Length: 249
Image (cartoon, rainbow, N blue to C red; front, side):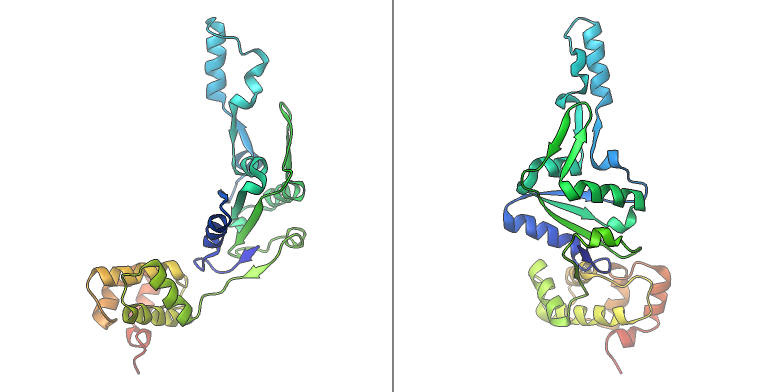
């Protein structure tokens, strides 16, 4: 289980892990109102209806096979159970889902098995690696946390953030990458609604480099602030403190 503010790289951990292990990445994006059908499986009613019409027309005879493997729409959880050790299952932003879905998820993950009434039990002989992320908009249940290895991901240090920018955007000069990373670090210490993540740091550095800016200055900073600050009140607050943002006395 990975927790931390939005934009610190929690989702990226799952992508890198899947790449490093040579496994398929299966992502379940959680949101308010998600239910078990959207996470597990659904029946392809359109295909079933076409099959019924074809049977009535004498083209074929599906009979009881309407609820067979051919008509099932596989969602992330079922796909991960079937893939087993060949997959990394990313359950992204679980804190957005409600308590009922979290309880359902706990049941599935405790056995890595699901039962489809029309088909039977589907289980993993060797379970997939599972990464659960949360931005802590609500507390996850202790029952789920007990089954996880927990890690908090914080915003990176200045040196680490410069290194990340240089890896993800090698065309960015190191001096500009350092200026941007230092400015973003100061932004995070300001009283802003949404503290920028590493992705915004990279976006801002790319925007400045595209405009041919070699070092941060008040003009370039004000012109490109929308790449890193995504809230109107935050922009007004930061614009009034550009000197502080640039580290000027």
